[in-house]
Image (tube, rainbow over all chains, first blue to last red; front, side, top):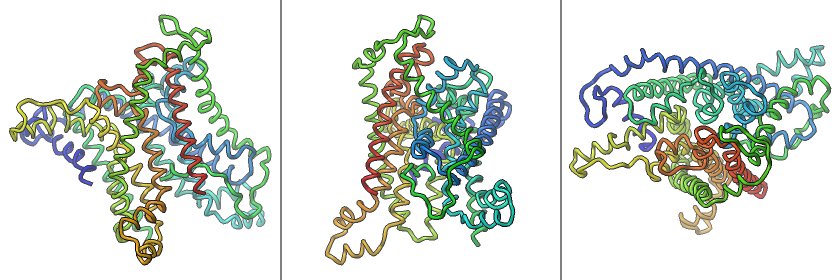
Length: 244
Length: 296
């Protein structure tokens, strides 16, 4: 536990250090946070990240949910090969996915690198997570409910909309959240598929971290860590309330 | 936790609700099929294809197929980098296991009401950006970092030393980032452990060590295998961490491929290295898969 937490706690403490270097503590200050809030480059990158992550989430959720539903409902040929193909993007080394998509976009499809290519690339490794989450939930679905709905005159579409979809909602939401976080945090696939106009936050953060220590980066990281903890705690307590 | 659901031979659930698909079903599934073909199958095939091509001095591709990229790739310089990357990944996996197993075991055997909290404490740092987690270590290890300044103030060191930019830092960064991937699957296995089995071992006269090695380890092996794969495979090519922590002094295979595609302007050669990495990846995937089949 200590191993997990010492680095990030130290990072947060020293983000309030007024000294430029970490060698010594020179007093409490929030000036790095102020500098951060006026850093136009980083703010624009954050906005780009949000655009890419949102589009990725919508696409992944659609592809993943519909795919899981069809694969559960019907028996397609080549089902095992298909399952393997869906599994591969989740475990494939990111650098391979990045370069192969780069080759596809630049050499074969002639799509200029930018938001479109980035969103396609992110969706490719995000939607399997939605699909697998929804698939797991489908295992618990009682087929007789749907059949009952159909017997009572509902069309397949209506029974999906009224019975299946509400049942699948928790899995869809958790898959969507997963996509959003994965996309927001992606560096390697992004670096291959981005253009100059679509620089996301991880790309900028990497550039800053590569040069060395940067007090503004301390501040930025601390905000992110604090936000993660807040979301995790909120999720934990909401989950608890539902169980009661 | 979702990632561990590897494809297995699916058995039809009971009930006749799985039918042969009609036209509408195919239509609804088609975006997914097209997506997989276009953005998973096709790019991989094309990567392999251009690995046999050449390039002109500007980096443009000349469709002239031969094996020269592979001849070059089998030079000791590149093989050494590939082996070193595999070595770092193996070391990372072993260290993650050494730290992760006791942690997962402790959480899995803790009273039930504590498990959720403990698991969350392990997971939360992992939910923050991996770049931030890596930067947190740069903050500690760099020449102007916290560890150096501590050692200087205590008088242990006269001059700051470079701890960052070394193989040690590379492995540390990888371990710190991938540890949860080891803890989670092992925890899932430990949680399922049947107390009766362990008690039976004791009743039959096994000491703690024997009970552990003969009963507990074999029963949690699926978790160990899943964790090992989830740490090992991504560590081989996680060049964002290895470049930041290693500072380019000990390049890994991912970094080399990245350079060939960007500043090196030699996409065919980068693709050849990528194809070799792809083969390593397929072997790793196949090994874990056959391991899993044997256990079923």
